[in-house]
Length: 318
Length: 318
Picture 1 (cartoon, each protein chain N blue to C red):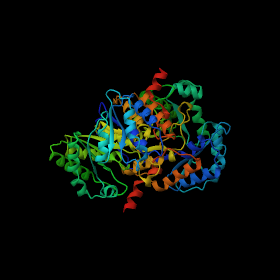
Picture 2 (spheres, each protein chain N blue to C red):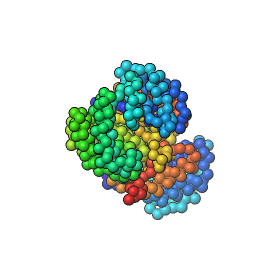
Picture 3 (tube, each protein chain N blue to C red):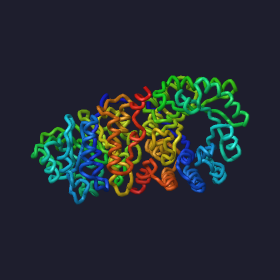
Picture 4 (cartoon, chains in turn brown, green):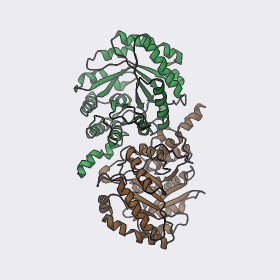
């Protein structure tokens, strides 16, 4: 039950999550300023933009300009999101980006139908072609991702067995093209998880697939984000997606004002205080969180940026 | 390690914490409106006011009027805070209040000196007289309370052994006047706790004093409030102080804008989703949180009030 990792790996998604959802407009230079500052904190993986239709996501209209203007820091991987071939082609044009083809499945049939107008069977049937596209462009594929793995506003509770089954099917499909999926992300897309459920789902996936590593993508929609992260850490999960200052919010209209991803600096404090190495300079990260707040021009949900780090307090007291 | 209680008892402190710290002014009728609404949610213990110097705490100048205007709900205990005999006498004038004399000790010498201009020895020496005062006025005493039990901005880390020692001394002092202290509250006054430390301190106190019950008063200064509460729950702690919507904030100037007590409705969701009974109607409580936000006129930190309860979502999906 308590198997804390010695080191966690953080996938920072604040810039992409945040600038996608903020009403804006936010100047390209300020987006670049935040990403460059984040890259100097010790974070080694930053998702910087999404290549999507600028008419639907105006905040990402300058995605190409943002990527081109970054000052790369050695050891930092810059990644991007895309939803189709057109987006992937735009990403491929940037040699500074580290591309990975993640195969995403929805665990919620109702959400899948609403978002993609597909049934679960149609979703699985579409995977081989996606995989072929990645292989065609030489984009490495090793990861799957399960959306709404802990519950869904449109479907309700999601049985852990369904998550396991999706991962099993996804791996079989990949294997047919000689691709090994040895990593899966589990997303609590709408904030349905609780610590017990995190343990149950992670445990069920591990039992069926002991050879894969897991990451957690937790939303703080209902305030349980860090408690759920704690449950994940205690199950030995060592990869987490987070957003500096809690940038991003919740994209679902019915949950207006709800929080988005768990906040990077709060998560780093949690790890740091329990002796888990993150590789991140928390005080530098707190400065980034304050910068993010300044850039968006309104309060962001992260707490440590107001409370300050305990390591800084200890140094001050001497 | 995992000893979840079947039922938790919540001590709601939002009205007292909130109206004390809000810049205001807030109309007496609106304070009463919130407290009366809270009393109809199933919460059975609400701290409604503090009887303190109105020159120092203008938000509590109407404390007597607030208490007098409440519509008592059967089964609900209404409590108050005071700092000295003068405050206690004001509280005693209200037969509708349930008074309890809590004996508070500071675990942080630096904070004790700063706040009360006393050394640890002087603090202990002052206890017998306090106790005599409560006995004189017929106010029951059964609880102690340890402030800054997990760390302090002025002192730094607090050794768990010091918390244990304070409780031991406090109980000895009480016993000399034939008073049994069988309950202690542990306060993370400045947000220094982490889940491991909660387990360590609760465990150390339990080992030394297996016959007392514990409550946790956790501040969310650095975002770890609910993760710390989870650790407490898993140690079997079944009493928590919380504040609706996260009313209250942090009273320390150096932490401007930092969060206060853990948020009642987020904590209730955590419990509810893990099968722990709180006796509270979460959806009614969420309405109170929205009311609190309306009353103070600015966003409050609780998350569920935007995200909505999962039980309501499940009912809607059917």
